Amino acid sequence: MMSLLLAASLFTLQASSAAPAPDYGKPANWLCLPGRSDSCTTPLRTTALNANGFGSTGLSPVTKDASVDCFIVYPTVSRDSGMNSDLVPGEGEEKAAIVSQFARFAASCRTFAPVYRSMTLSAVTAAAAGANVIKPAMLAYGDVRAAWKEYLAKHNKGRPYVLIGHSQGALMLQQLIANEIEGKPEARRMKLAVIPGFNLLVPQGKLVGGTFKSTPLCSRPGQTGCALSWVSFREGNPPPSGAIFGIADRPGMTVACTNPARPGSTGWVALDSYWNARSTLPVPGGPIQWSAEGAPPSPFLRTDGLVSARCVNNGPRGYLEIRTNADPADKRTDRIGGEVGVLGMFLPGWGMHLADIQAPMGDLVRQVDALNGRSGAVIGQTR
Image (tube, rainbow, N blue to C red; front, side, top):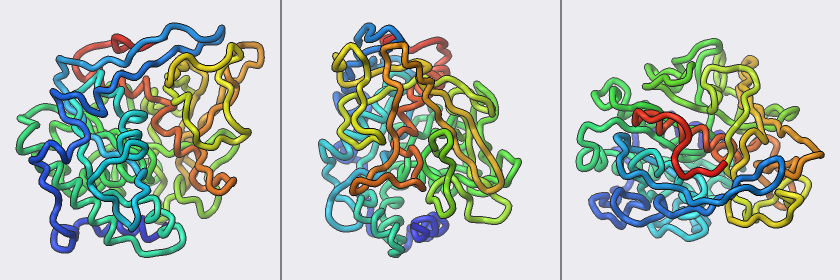
């Protein structure tokens, strides 16, 4: 996987070496655009899961008056052959990632999500085995960069914006900020960068430096012009030696961690979470029984305070530690998933990678919505 990390330092060369990007003037090359029905405007039936069982069920809302835009880059989900995906988003791949990880942000902002030739699951597997994936990474980044240029030229019109991505999407946005935003006029309009799931490096004890020259980590609630970044690990299972996430590979650096529910906090903070109750991904201990009452009445569940998180930085290690606030006496599950399972095994160096977005989803949506000058819960979310 080191070749993927090395690729991050070489993205500035992409303009002269990558293949021509798609035409992002064509709506077909966007998964999400304002003013149409698409993956980001899909109403998500969601039920509150409380200590006393299932609560109310509602549909995720879509705002009609947001003053903020969200530019979204999805993670590695493509099962296409080869190192890069095609430009045909799959129902169970790119579209599913947008729905489960990003569609709720449509309650808080205008959503823009380009289709890009992302590195495939095969590319990530090859990188983990030591293959060189610099060219596939640069091709993917070239597409994201072109989509960003199209967004600025045709859609932004001076509006404030938020960058949102996970895993490979976070890597792409790290490089976009470093190469195309920092030091330019559009940097003043960037309200937040929500980029979990890929190591972002900062000098130990500092908020800026390393990956970014001038974009700091968010260190207090309500701060703007900053980045929210973390990689998740279960309580009691810190990143092991050789982990792909959570350990800085440069002397004097650590992996950035900002608590997504309360930036700047180092203590435990309860999370407002949204889970895909019908996910078929493997979970340690087997499938989750979400409630003693029986099967969930909707595809998605909201749990408020079922899990908590705190940031840990210890030398080169930096990660978001997640624990379940288990109570055998109530009706809710005492387990959540998030680990990456392969061939019946869970990869310790990946931590709770699959829970990076879901665990603090409600907290993130509210922080973005607050940029519109609104406060409190987004209308339509269930409790």
